[in-house]
Image (cartoon, one colour):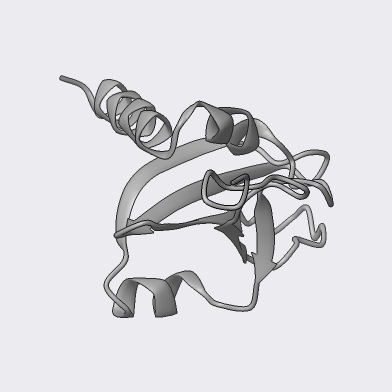
Length: 116
């Protein structure tokens, strides 16, 4: 099993674990009505607090260029942290700082216990 295949398998398991509704949020670019809420917590802090990396996706983050998206989970809590890759030293382009987002219920959604 290659690293890419293993990463895809872990990412698929992560999406299934969080449910079908989270699948569209994983691909979203974090709009204001997203299931991902901006967090001041850093990836380092999350790992120190017992979160485990469950998937890493390499790709392009909007128009800002290549970035790694790292998904971490502990119990029923999940975060995604976006770590922009540094460009060549020659490019001198500004890179957005790393950022983490917490998975939350979508805006306006009610849980099963609230609908009674």
